Amino acid sequence: MKPKSKILIIAGSDSSGGAGIQADIKTVTSLGGYAMTAITAVTSQNTTGVKSVLPITPKEIEKQILHTYNDIKPDVIKIGMLHSTNIINLILKVLARTKFKKIVLDPVMVAKGGAKLISNNAIKLLKYKLIKKAYLITPNIPEAEVLTKTKIRSLDDMLISIKILSKLGAKNILLKGGHLKTKYTYDILLNNNKMKIFKNKKINTKNTHGTGCTLSSAIATFLSCGKPLKKSCELGIKYVNQAIKSNLVYGKGNGPINHLNSFKINRKFL
Ligand code: PXL
Image (cartoon, rainbow, N blue to C red):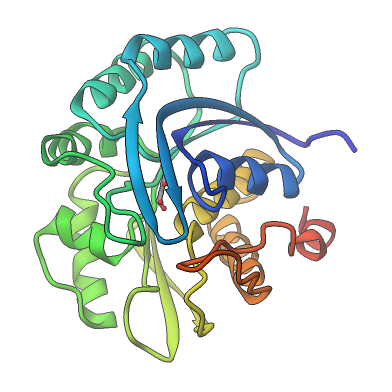
């Protein structure tokens, strides 16, 4: 099978394989895309928590991006964990010098076990400089709370928060509602001043490590092969839900989802 499109992933490595660049590559590949990578940081972690984070130098990240990009042009860029102001400044510099078509930015802040994956100053830079460059941002509720300085406890709060987020300049926003303690999960897409709410039955499991990375990579893959934004989000959410439903139960903590539980979707939709 020949890949349908090419995606460059700029993100951190998760040694446990459930989140980060490992989740991104698995997602893009299982949905029929070609994954390229620029690693921003190496984390040592397992399902019970993060042991350490080693940032890669901006110079090395720049080389990974430009050397790859100058040879094989990606259709879409997915950005995940960025970690520091140095790394975000580098990404801003690279973006100014290249013609990336579409950027899907997952504003990664905290790992499932609570470890911080980005510094406070870097959050400011992401908020005021990088978000503007994105075609789509995919914050979850804790990330949206930080970015909007509001508390989100309900679907109504999400609707208020997404409007505040839109002032930061991203073209489109998918606010993910999985952290709310509701029977259903509500994910809201704001696109051209129009809201679309994706409502899905919540799957009761602690094994959801890497869902955010997976969703943004799945959406990036669907976009990269020409699907419209709303359809890409709908299919991305379906893919993640299928992957959660499989319930692998690996490890003692918050285990990974099953990226391979998707071939049905692949055949049906791509
Ligand atoms: O899920 C957010 C995330 C992103 N990137 C890396 C991670 C995690 C969570 O653990 O490890 C590298």
